[in-house]
Length: 285
Image (cartoon, rainbow, N blue to C red; front, side, top):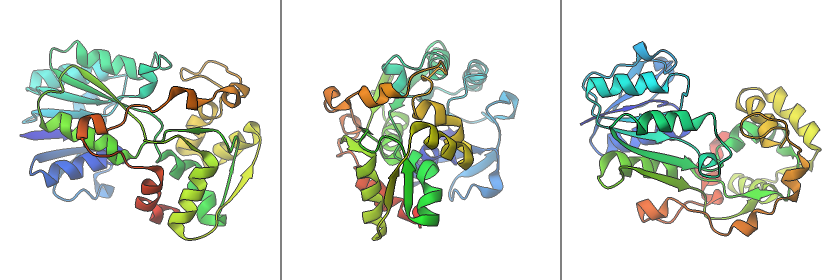
């Protein structure tokens, strides 16, 4: 068996690649920068999902698909023509909630309509987002500046998502299913900062700022923080439509109760945010 992992250097893709290699599976890891990939045991190849002709499907049986809606239909068609039989999609819990109607759904639909075996992974908020949002200021000043310190959610460890992906790629019984994957606990931003501080063994301060000030901070950071600033802080909805940041403050996620986790698929307890902080502590030093 050979599995093509797209987005192989991402937080989830890297763990999927590592898990497949450990399972003794042949892995073709797709990345735009092979020289920086550092994926031992995998066949690292250069390619870009926005350029479907650059994706090498020869000899591939199964695929882990990173979401790229602009080319999803062509990518899936080429995969089927090359003999790929099963596709596991990295989607989003926002699809289940009805918040995402434009980004991940086209990818899911392309796979569903292909006639191939498919499974959708729908993680909620990634704990790893905090590396982009808070990493720079924690490393430089041991402080976090953000809005709404008492707001919280159920951040999921990327390894939980990867573990579900591995089950869906390697085992039968997951065809036609969409798995929502969240962390096991509702944890506030202030509590998340404390968990990172505990992992570091050092104090990390939390300075509350307004949503507008937080947006300026995210924009200065650049990358994911800048791209997601308006959505994360409530200035837009998932599809980019104008929204009111005050709505975030008014919503109480505790009314949702426990959300689905990886345990329903893997049988293992989901990893907590504190576990994630310990696993990624070097990224905050």
